[in-house]
Length: 174
Image (cartoon, rainbow, N blue to C red; front, side, top):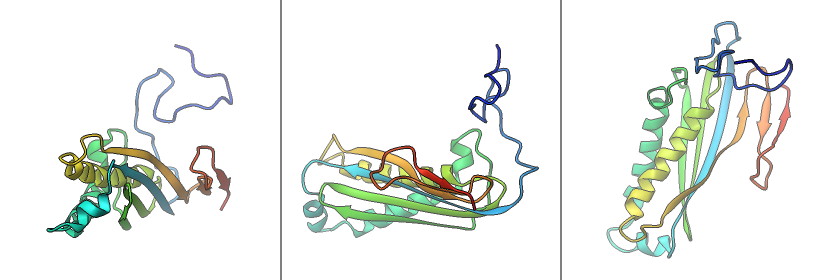
């Protein structure tokens, strides 16, 4: 197997032989790194109305938040090539919207590698808890638009997803 042409973009977790490998980050400097991920849980019907009926949905939202936090800490157990990190901080927010939920996770670390996977894993897991709860009333409930919205730290500086939520984004060196 031949490698990509010199200067061509390549996947960092694939070696020159096409095999998966864990990236060696030992030569990178420790910097403060932050990542924000977001996703939506969509459901037909009015989720607010379902949650307003007794016994209510406050515990559901809190359970989803806690599940997201727990998942962020377990990311290397779920994503094979992800470095284990001692996370310095994270938050998971779940907001009830008319057609479901908006989920947001922010992770922070002082390390040699980023925390995007931890933010994405937190978001996805919180969303799955919400989908599980909705399945009885809406078997078509779905997780949508899981993506990184912000990342900062390290060599690449700051990256922001455009306000329209599409790919691309812009990077500013720090």
